[in-house]
Amino acid sequence: MYREKILDSWDEKQYNLLAFLHKNNFSATKEECLHTLNLNVSVLNNLIVSLEALASESGLFSISKQGRILTVSIPFDKNLDDIFHYLLLSSIKYQIISELFHKETLHIPSIEKN
Image (tube, rainbow, N blue to C red; front, side, top):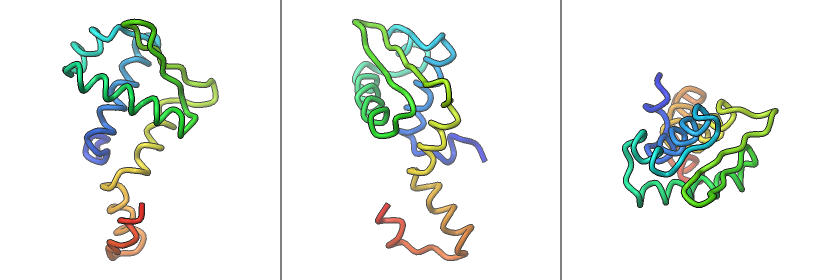
């Protein structure tokens, strides 16, 4: 299965922004992010806010803004795969697939709790 088919759309956008920053030597201007990822300003600003929260709760990376420049920092013992895995575990699509795979039935109340 492809990553974009499992991650929720917002999580996919978060991951794409992190991957772009990672590939761009961990830093890019907001304009570069907007153009490359085909985002509008409000979506990019919301992504930044959600990534700041994700960074705080996961401890897998940090993201900072210095004027128009975004920078991501990933500790030496972590990588994008760790971040993807963290996002994957919260994906409702993944939870449904996991529930069906492990239990062969779908128990909606247990998924709703997550």
